[in-house]
Image (cartoon, rainbow, N blue to C red):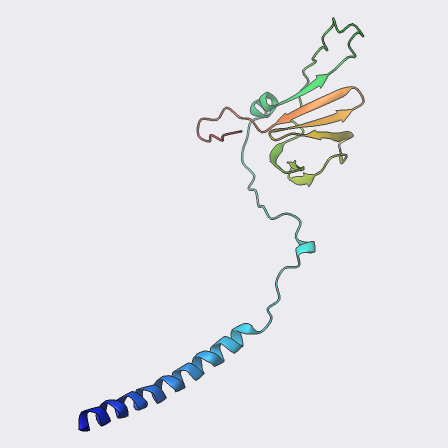
Length: 151
């Protein structure tokens, strides 16, 4: 009988000590629940931050070419001629869904860049159009350090 009374007394005493601790935890939770101010989604321009790197113009010209297409015959005998022009003034960094990051800014189809209209966005390339001139910008690189799998 004495043992059960001692155990019961110890249990009630420990429960009262833990109850005061739980009150402190409840106070801490209430202070955390207060609404906090953050960044408004409409004010955020881009969720990505890109650091500028030292890149050579030769590499950019390998990835970017301007195609000048001429109309083919109705019979389809003649193939369009390709004229390669330096397109290093455009730098394609990334493509996500229907948006492309060109020269550090996000663009969608029909946006105008230096007189060229963003004509088409594929999964690894972008086509800019100005009249009959087309510029093909590609994210495909031949760097051995980075390898991406394009499905």
